View 1 (cartoon, rainbow, N blue to C red):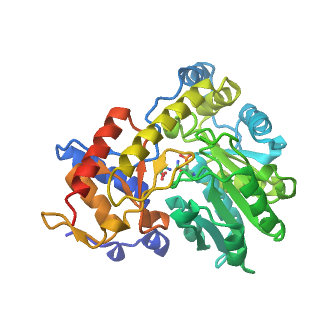
View 2: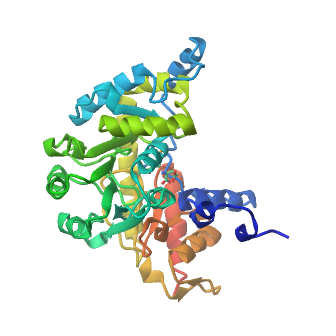
View 3: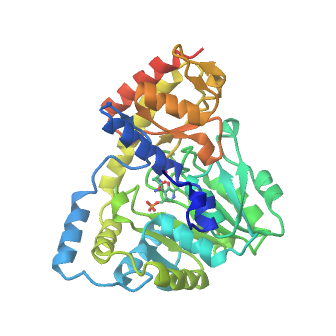
Length: 405
Ligand code: PMP
Ligand code: GLU
């Protein structure tokens, strides 16, 4: 008989930890496909493009050149140097090498920072809707996640007043992403300045600005980094990575730029957990950052076209309520109109988990319930898939929604 977690000698930490909903839903979609169904999985936030050729070639060359050994824990010097150049070039951020650290994905960067900063009971403001792992990582390290929620009517962006009201004596850290996973919302330069005014009044706060979708930004004024505002210099940790903008999810490479004392602490932590990230990947990543970014911008343009396709189609489904995402590759419709309804076969929809299950079982379309992102009225669909798949998925969703009453 299968034992429950409680019968096993597992730690309270792992028993109390939530499984990543994005990863769980992606696996469920694979399982349903393995049963012989034609599943279109719009679950994972993963570009469907391959890593650009010149980056792959650089990794192959690095292997031939002997980049097969341990690297310094905070990263290969040449990659850290390339990151310094990139931060200056793209973001107006001035860092020294000792303010840069490379990890096994942006996920590990965020985990390192949380381990480095949080004591039990410290509060962490998380702009909500949030990426699922922020909350889990914070809670795993003794922090108290405090969502600062903004609904669809404010384009899912908390106002400075909301943020100010959520800060207490116990607040130590703030985490947000722009462009945002899961909503696609982007904070403008003016909005960033307004947030900076609030943070400037609390100099003991550290802010994680997660900019992993930087290159997938559709607004004309372009990407803006909170850390580039003069008064934010010592408070902001800018997190980025290679997964999204360079289609390098499997390479597991992310990085941070921030105060040197925090980088030093993160390096100490990473030295005990995983050591430096993989050597030949880092070599190729430095080439990625310093090369012409046209391949990244071509992917962005493709995502932008798909956004139109998906938004147009979703807006034609009665009951769906959408914002107009300005970046990343997600739509985050409010599907609460369907709560309390049933399909003609008796499938009852009472929440976002039911709705995603209904889409997966009846339309064979994989999505992720909004409840995992702190938004129980919504679901997330990734449009990092081909036009054909997206068109087919939208048709199927429309069809099964029409059967709910
Ligand atoms: N931040 C956000 C907002 C994300 O969506 C993701 C998911 N890729 C990450 C961080 C983690 O990225 P990585 O794959 O580099 O660990
Ligand atoms: N970040 C991506 C997502 O949100 C990849 C999966 C994960 O790490 O959560 O789907």
